[in-house]
Image (tube, rainbow, N blue to C red; front, side, top):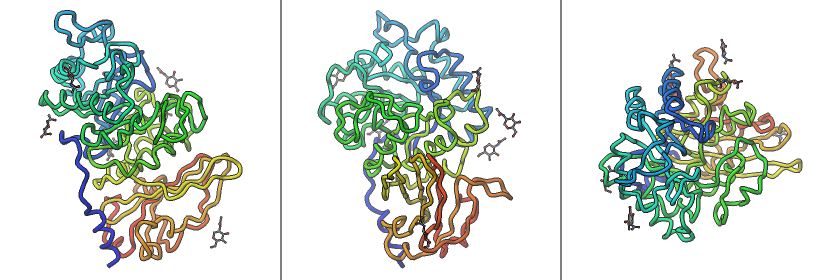
Length: 436
Ligand SMILES: *[C@@H]1O[C@H](CO)[C@@H](O)[C@H](O)[C@H]1NC(C)=O
Ligand SMILES: *[C@@H]1O[C@H](CO)[C@@H](O)[C@H](O)[C@H]1NC(C)=O
Ligand SMILES: *[C@@H]1O[C@H](CO)[C@@H](O)[C@H](O)[C@H]1NC(C)=O
Ligand SMILES: *[C@@H]1O[C@H](CO)[C@@H](O)[C@H](O)[C@H]1NC(C)=O
Ligand SMILES: *[C@@H]1O[C@H](CO)[C@@H](O)[C@H](O)[C@H]1NC(C)=O
Ligand SMILES: *[C@@H]1O[C@H](CO)[C@@H](O)[C@H](O)[C@H]1NC(C)=O
């Protein structure tokens, strides 16, 4: 009956994506930049790859090991024009590192900029797309993060940005090697509109900063929709605000990238990192770790291995959650309600508190199921709290029982996010915990 109405809505034609077969669910992995910046070497990459395996992070889906900026030598090969790695950091070359990463069962990613130079001042790939893509493929590269520094002014309209980035799409495709294309033009010219069929993901904003909500003039825009200076030092919760309108543009093979994770880097507390990880998971951002995974606290490991949240991020529907409401509070900050649909007529919703005080909230199903209509709004759902563990199995997702009409009197701490999975009771008896 009413349950089938929503199934029909999901049958709308899918938007075409880049046809390289990759990132059908958001990519997961680790990147050097947020923790190590330019201070990288062969050892940084190989130690991280080993830690991904030894900490069992690979079983959770983290698979790409990505070298960000500053791997390059001072200049290209003078005779061939091919890119060359810094011999002091990578004495055995990039291919050797990629081979070792592959031998650990992982995939290998690299970085460049669609400009004359990279952001760290190394040689960029603008007008060298073909030779760079070919060289990366010969090294066994599986992933390219492609930045936007020193772009020689080749931005300003979607068409100009499209041409610059699509050139690399063609160059990567021509290598014959499937290489995940992670565009990083900071949201300039609206990649959610123009990059859907040329990239697997695109950054939506300036760079993240390991901070919950501090405003910084270097990230001056209040919205990304008409942003003239994406900048950097964007606090984590500001990027969640930026992401709210553009969820509608993402899907399998083409994702909004909210930037790499800061979980474990020390600038936020446990609840704030839970908010960070939860919201990146719900809106289907790539989950690229950015901490030192060779030296993690238990709290950090706990957050990044919440497999109930990871399952939301990797849900085969690929449907990003959207914001239902945002209520500004007199004491500063706000409460936000987000909801998304999952496979098998299941749902996820989250309540986030960015205010300085704890809050008590009745979460109404009229709001949670605003897109699903009256029969859902008056329906009964089994709710699982995805940040609590089942005491008998130890698995993430505590069964809170059946709820009709609302979740009353939710106590939510400052900077905290609570996430629930909702299963309609009419079908819940048939489901077992394995699907959580
Ligand atoms: C190149 O593009 C074509 C068509 O767009 C696609 O079928 C093919 O799989 C792509 N190859 C790679 C390696 O991405
Ligand atoms: C590794 O992760 C998998 C997948 O979540 C889990 O089932 C398994 O118990 C973990 N193993 C160890 C040794 O932690
Ligand atoms: C793409 O880049 C190559 C250099 O790698 C250049 O020769 C070519 O003109 C570019 N094509 C477009 C459409 O910008
Ligand atoms: C490991 O992490 C701890 C706590 O953050 C820090 O004090 C220590 O310096 C780190 N060790 C290394 C080798 O980075
Ligand atoms: C993590 O917790 C275990 C016990 O659960 C403890 O033995 C270990 O020392 C802790 N590690 C850190 C880095 O706190
Ligand atoms: C939640 O609803 C209950 C009863 O429906 C009411 O007594 C309570 O005041 C409400 N709480 C808030 C925070 O609105």
